[in-house]
Image (cartoon, rainbow, N blue to C red; front, side, top):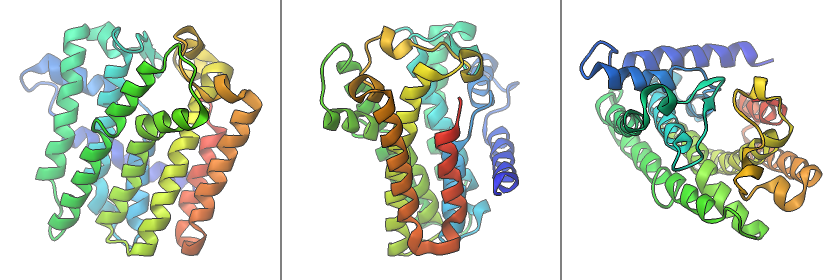
Length: 293
């Protein structure tokens, strides 16, 4: 029902990324080429979509949230480049093509990730729509916190520390809440802030984002076991190989599927007070359960 509308938003994000990224011909050209290789290499654009949609649900104009949507996509891309490095997850493929460090070398990949992080922050500072300075300041604080040692980076540290160890469900939730969930939660809250959402709207969006983030990581864990590598775009079985802490590993595949569905239901229930305004976010949440990559 909403797929054509979602595709329009996704196309706008792609156009925005091309605009906000440095030209590949500008020096240092190789660095800019490496940045574009990972950012413009496809992807669901889930985080950017959440930012644009939350802005409209909150009553704002989606165009006002486009710089923020592009910023969070760049920061997400930076995290993937670094995750793929040999010192981290040591992956050779991402979205069906060689990972950044396999093409440009480890040093350039590291620097491309660093540059994407700072480029995302630069966009949030330099591309603020008129009259939204305060809202963008709040959104930037949200983004930086979600990317910090008490967000995505901290979650990655916890994930590495848990390799080969026995942890309980609450500890696993904490890893997922930070490693993956923090940026997804931030994406939707940023959009709500830029759209000047009132408190009840922000509460609904926040609960939705937290539940969606957890469901997304659970399905990610499941895909590593169940997906077709050709469709997934990377090698499967890596979690088991590296003895990662995952939901299927802790509670079993069937229970992991049930928990993912329960979190999607929680996300959708959070939007009930918003009625039809939240329908497109409900539709987007349902796609998380159906994804194959």
